[in-house]
Image (cartoon, rainbow, N blue to C red; front, side, top):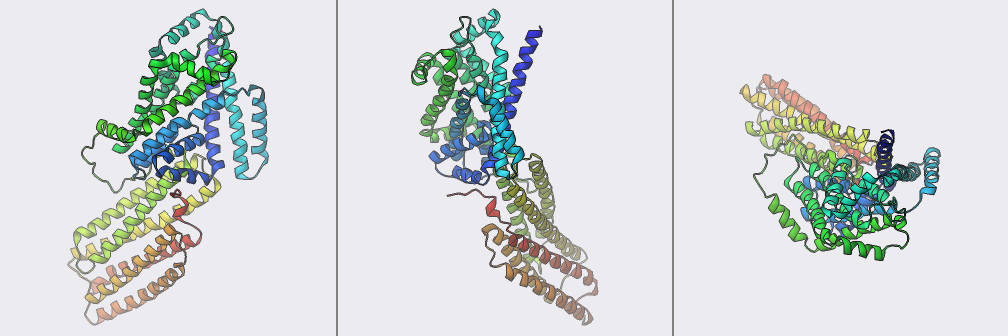
Length: 562
């Protein structure tokens, strides 16, 4: 009993170290890659071949095909990527995930401590953020192999257990059972890289004869196929509650791996013979880890070559499985870009945040246009819509702030990303304030309507002129940040001075009209309230312009699409 518990806890402990090392390596690789991650993500929107390459590269950095697939699902759900593009990325992700198995196949057990020590020293001593992340990556790489070594050591006694060897013999002789075992393993661990690492380690254990593998390559391949099926569950779970195209992307991932398993399961023995022929020769227990890695790589490359030519068919198939149904009612107060599933991939997550902030900016622009258009004719429906958009903006700001708080707390942002994100929060704050002030103006006009008051023609004209200048300032400031163009900012600051001067003049003119009986005295409070809103809007526009001057640019958050 004691020996059994030692094996179980040793295996679980080694697996925990492996998964922690893999996740840490993924995080540090992303930070070390820094701005290059945007260039890699920029490849996602090109043709299908570049999509495959980008999927493989992103997965190599993230060390997880599930993470890449979830990111593709998030982009599709946000409307930033088409379904065919996302499916081609998933094909590449399946190739990229084989890199982990190839790395594991290297026999570096004698140097594990060296990697851990060197990585720790670099990350502990160096002050440069990028160098520190390189050191942490090396440290995590050592931890990954420490976990594998731990699992290998506790598995050795199992090879001499007659009960266990009989169970393994059944799996080795029944391919379908092997597929089921592999699928179940990945469902439990939620990482095909981890279960394949366990498979490589276990297959490297000698059987009762002390020479051949306890499992053999023909027994390992069906389990490998099951591992590939099991990893699709993560993508399917991530698509729950997402758009139909996001669900189709997840289904495409499942179809890719299931179709591959159904095809290869009939040719296990000839496939094993092919892998043995092209892999390094030697004692089976010494080379089977590399053979499994090669089997994994060739399986995914073969299926990608098959499906990349049938991409159109795959798109039609998933659309048949998940057909277009009744369109969901649009809720402006809910984010349409944010996806918490990609929170651990900062380059992708920040792109989604920037898109959501730009959406908020467009809502404010629409509110300003509605306000200007309704002054003079006081359309209650339009003013109510402005007020409703103001409430929606409040909800969106809360959602975005919560999302960014979660992103900051994940610790995955580089210093540059954190600095730009802080500037983005300031922009969001001013955009939301513009929305609040627009809603407040709508309230003031609606209140006038309820009391049967109306601004004079002269007052209406002055308010329209002021709002027109606010619109120009706002569009100019936002445009400067979107395009990275700062030449017009000096003009914006001068426009604010005009608004401040106009504010004083308009107050004086209003009082003059009241004295002359052209305006009702009861309009003084609502008129002043509207002027205060315009004045504060001008200040917010100045804040946005100053944000652009302080190198805040939306181009930083967007991937480099070429």
